[in-house]
Image (cartoon, rainbow, N blue to C red; front, side):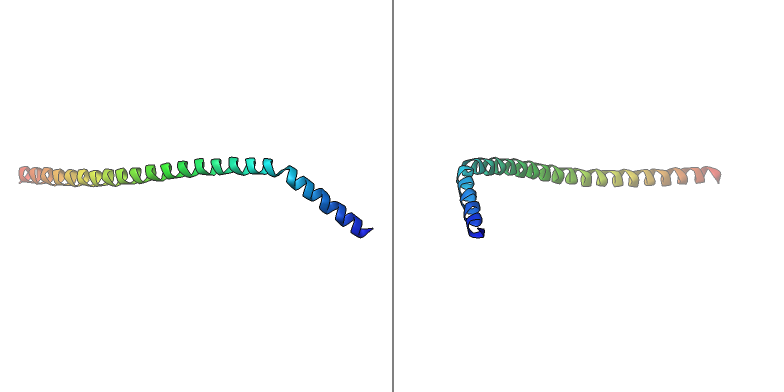
Amino acid sequence: MFIKTVALAALILTTTGCANSEALEASVSSLNQKVDTLTNKVNALTEEVGELTTQQLSNSEAIENAKSSVDSANERMDNIVSSYKK
């Protein structure tokens, strides 16, 4: 009895596996396309992040230069004010 049940289950699995192979291949193909699409999107976002990082570094340098200019101007103004106080 046990052997007949196992044989019947194996026959059903084999038949079902053969019948669904085309659907399985279509599903795998669809998943491969989705993975490719996501890979392209990740690559595009990686490039965009790189560009934004470069832009952020440039902005940080400009801000530091502006702060330095402001400090120099404040120092000159302080020197001018101290010369009038004397």
